[in-house]
Length: 304
Image (tube, rainbow, N blue to C red; front, side, top):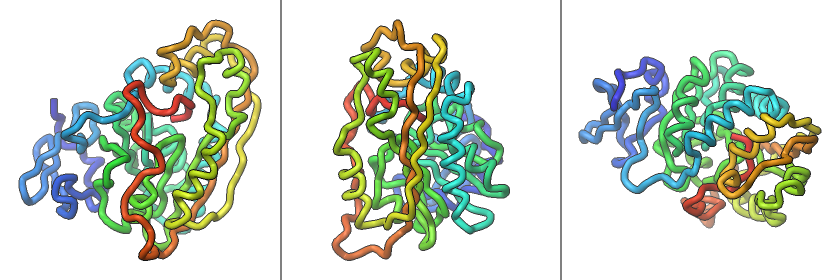
C-alpha cells in the first residue's frame, strides 16, 4: 500500500530518473513519484520508493535473514568494517557529498558514512523489500529505493560523489556513469580468511572464490584506477545467539544446522578505493561483475 510522500525524498529527487523512460526526472505525487510521461512509482508504507517493477527481483534477503542481520550488526560485530568504509568514503573532498550505496541492505554502512560526513545525503538501493524497510529509516539524511543492481541504475549521469559497494554485486559501467568525474568507488569484499573457522564448524557454508580478486580487478579496470586498499582483519568471539544470527543472515541458513557455531572467528575483508577513469571507447557500456544469483539468493557471505 502506498504511503504519503516522504519529505526526505525531496532533496534527492535530482538524482533519480524514471526507470522506464531512463531520462525523465521524477516529481512528487500523492504517495508516489511520477515522470512527465505518467509512469508512476509508489512510495511504500515503510517509506522507500518502489522503483523496481516488472520481473521479480533476484534478492534472497527474506524477513528472517534481515532480522538476523539487524540483530548481529547491532552487537557491533562488524563495526570495524563500518568505520573503514566511512573513513575511505570521507576522502571524497566534496562537501556536502552525495553518497549512493549499491546493495545497501539495512543501510548500516550508509548510515556510518553519513555520520562521518556532516551534511552529506545518501541514497540506498536494494532489491529486498524487507531490508529496505530498515534502510528507509537508517539515517535522517538517507532515503532508500528498490532496485536490481544488474539493471541500469535509475540515476542521472554524474550525480554521485561516492558509490559504496559492500559485500554486494557490482555494475562497473553504471557505477562509472553515475559518479562525478572526481568521484570515488568504495568496494568491500571478503578474503578467503573471512569466517574460515565458521566454515570448519559448518562445512556447508560457501567459501570465498579464490579467483574473486582477479575477476574483480579485470571487471573494474576499464572504468576505475586503484586508489588504495585497506585490509580489515580482526578476531571476533561469537556467543551462541550472535553465532546463530551470523549464520541466519546468510542464505546458507536454509541448508545448515548451526549447532556448535559459537566460538572465535576471523573477520577479514579488503576495502578498496577506486578513482573514476576517463572512459575509453573499448570499455563495455553495461554489465555486472557477477551473473544473477540462483533462486536461493546471492553468495552467502554475511555483511550487509
